[in-house]
Length: 112
Length: 118
Image (tube, rainbow over the protein chains, first blue to last red):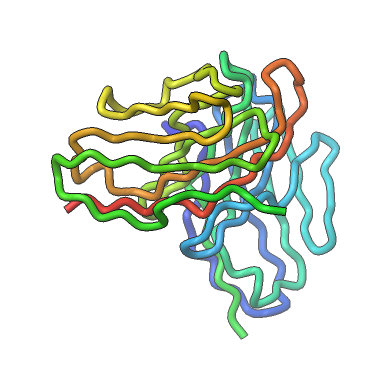
C-alpha cells in the first residue's frame, strides 16, 4: 500500500463547477500536509498548505482530518486554467526531517 | 530572482551508459532534494543534502545511483550503467529549511531532467 493514496481521475468538469479531491495517508506520524499543482511537463508548485482547522485561499479550500488520516481539496467556480494534476503531499520527520511524500496525483480537466 | 535550474533538460542515453544530472539550487538554500518521477506517477524521494552533508539516501533505488554536493551548493546526481527502468524525470528541489528548524519551509522545484534510456 502506498503511503499517500489519491484517485488518479481524470475528473472532467465544466467551467464554474465545484470539484473535490480526497487523499489518505498511512503514516500517523506525518506532521505537515500540502497540496501541490503540477502542469503537464512542468515541475510541481506549492498550491497551499493544509492545517488542522481547515484553510481557504480564494476558490480553494483544504481540510485535514488527522483521526481518519484524510486530506481534501475543494475547488469552487472551476476555471479552464485550473486544469492540472493535483498532488497530495505529506511531510514527516524521519532522520532527514524534511522529505516530502507525494501521492500519485489527481488529474483535473476543466472544459468550456 | 533565479529559481532552481537543472541541466540538461533532456537526456537520451543508451542502456549501459553513465549519466550525470546537474542541479543549481536557489542561492542560500541549505537543503537540497532529489526526486524521481515516473510517467503518470507522483515524485518519489531519492536523497537529501543539508549543505554538503548527505543526510538521507534511503530513496536511491540501487548502488548505481550516486549523488554529491561537495561545496554545499550545486549538486550532481550520477547514474551508472543506465537501465530502461531508470527512464523518468529527475527533479531537484531546494529549501531554506534546516534539519532542526522544525518549520515546513517550502521546497522549490526545478524544471527537471527528462531521462530516456533506450
